[in-house]
Length: 532
Image (tube, one colour):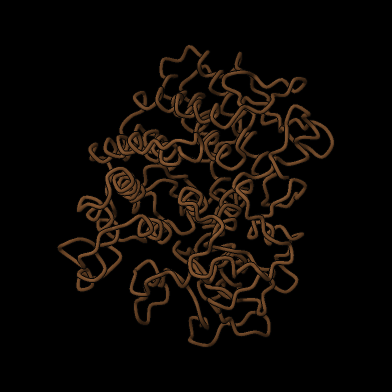
């Protein structure tokens, strides 16, 4: 079932930051005394909370966390993509508290706090309703809110924590510690997981399930050493085992089925947490993020797209060089059928008729290892192209997977390895993810264990595997911090950003982003993170 976009109802949510004073964001004028009286009304209020997840899938959050990792960057290209230096700062781990661009922390902070306020309002209103079906809707929204708190505290550390309180614009909250926020996330997910239905029901997809809550909990526990200063891999392992033993999810046969236009059908067996996007999502720029922001403009003509790509984000050279070029995730090409080309695009690009593609007066040459933060050529850099294009609509139906079953297998493998060391069980879990990405005649070389290449999976193998498997899905920065690799590129540590005139923020403090100064100006109870 595709969730339809429903406008916000029954909520006045306040942004915690503004240019000079508190801004009231009003979404309709229904109040809980006149609304929340029928199942359809509760369903509409719940759909409003789902709808805002689309902003995670596009632009602010996804682009910033990828550009802050060792996998992707956004060079200045001619007169484009400078944006006040924000992308150089993001690449160099030198984000500032006063940087107020389109994609920077200020927008992430504001949008997600408004979304949290929306969820809290609807949780309270639905809880007070007399509609018998209310409990399932409340559990769904609490899961969404827990996810928002998780990604916000992961980025910003300490943050305001509103549990079920109504936000008072005259008495704005102070920051709660990161451990308090994560404790709340864990408590919420533990409380709702057995109140949600199991996954695997096509009529329920893509709504929250028991396994969604368990998978989010697993992610918190996987990174617990970062958040709490102590490892909790045993708890993560327990949750991964629960999801696997449920039998509700499996790997799809073709990796790229997870990213097709109709991936709500082709990828649903693997999608544990999936943000639904459809062709009506004009305000959310309902297009695959990396297709819109990454591809050169000439791809509009080549694929007959109804929108013009922006020629922005590209792979860092070290990440490009890390790929095994026989890996299906690096390149899938059917001879003569350019439409089915997927993976990493690099080198000279050609139009559908075989002529070289042009960007202005330049041939489009996606030079993969010549990338600099001030690009020498406007199309430098390899591009991620794993989302299927659509030439029938200005927006597309490709949803954004947030947690896939392959993540559960790799989380389990990592936990077992950290807890017990190398084993054939770990080898098998990683092999399960890798098998679909290599032809069977390559398995003896590309798979691990006694039955294949004789090698055991080690921690850095999992780190690399996660990079290739989840490229462009918003996980690389989190993985780098957990593996203590945030300040190292894969091949040439530190070399890539030496041409950045803004310097480099390589201290542990830069693992947490600054609170936007505009928010502190509005709410003096907020304090800034160290070294900003």
